[in-house]
Length: 376
Ligand code: GMT
Image 1 (cartoon, rainbow, N blue to C red):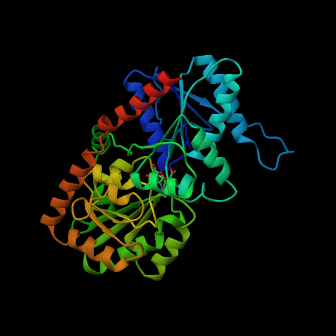
Image 2 (image 1 turned 60 degrees about the horizontal axis):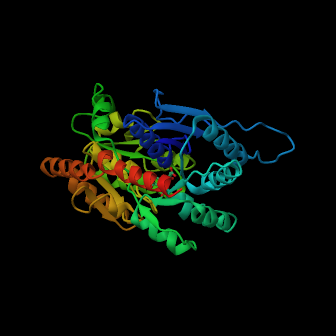
Image 3 (image 1 turned 180 degrees about the vertical axis):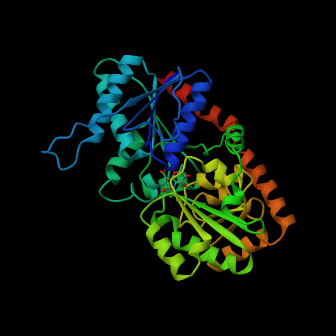
C-alpha cells in the first residue's frame, strides 16, 4: 500500500509512534510518505520505501498566525496526486484530522477518493481537544474520518465521554520493536560514568509538562535516596524543568540528579536504569513506560488513564494514586532494596513489554488500512 503519515515530528510520543509505525510498514514492503513540517526525530535514515515531504508555510506579515493547516492540506493533495497515495494516516487529531479532511474534499473534486485513518493519542482529546475553542472542529474531524483508532481503552472511553462521537473507535495499543530496542542498548555501557557501583539508577523521561507532575518525580526520588544510595536521571526538556532544578536545590539533592535534556540515546540510558518513574496526572498510554519495560526496567507510575493497561501492578512495577508520594516511594524501595526482587521485576517488566511487540500490533493497522481502501 502507498500510505501518507502525518504527525508531529518532535520528541513527543505520538510522533515516535507514527515514525516507528511508518518505518516498520516500509520494511514490510509498503511505500510510506511522511508529510510534516520537519523530518521526524527518529527517522534517521530514509530508504527506498520511506519518503519525507516537508510542509513549508510561507511567512507573510499580514497573518498574525501562519496557516499551517492550509499548507498541510495543499501538500497532502499534491503528494497524493504525485505518488498515487492510497490512504492518509493522521496521528493526533489537532489539526491533522482537520487538514486531512480538507485534502480529501479537494481530491474528491478531482475524482480521487482516498480514506483517512485518524489515531487519537491523548492530549489531543484530554487536554487540548476538549477546550471549547477546538471542540466542534475536533468532534467533526473525528466523525468525518473513515477509521478512528485510539492507543488505549481508557482513551477510547474518554473520547466517547467528552465528545459526541458517532464512529466506532478501534483500540490499537502502542508498540515497541523489541529487537531494535535491545540492539540500540548494546552500545558500550556508561553506567559507571553516572553512578557508583552501590548506587541504583532511577530514570524519568518526558516533555516536562505540568501533566507529568515533575515535582512528584523529585519528591519520590528524595524519599528513595534517604533509604537507598541512588542517582536520578531526568531526560527531556520542557516548561517544568527549571522548577525541578529549584526543588532539587531546595531538597539538597542536586548532586544526585542529572538533567540530560532531550536525547536520541533513550535505549542506552534505559539499559542501565534500575527503575522508571512516571507519576503523571494522566497518560493515555505511557509510551515511555513501555520503552523502559522493554529494556527490563520496572515502572513506578500512577494509575491515571491508560497506565494500568501498560504497567501491571505488582508485576512490571507498581501503580499508585496520583500525588501519593509516600506510596510511590515505598513501592520503589520494595523493588530497589532487594537484589532478588529487582531482578524478578526486571524479568517480569520485559515479559509484559513482549505483549506489545510491534509484530503483534502492526497487522491490526494493516487490516484496518486494507478494509478502508476496499470500502472506497
Ligand atoms: O505525553 C505527552 O505529553 C506527549 C503526547 C503526544 O501526543 O505525543 O503523548 C501522548 O501520546 C503518547 C503516544 O500515544 C502516549 O504514550 C502518551 O501517554 C500521551 N500523553 C498523554 O496522554 C499525557
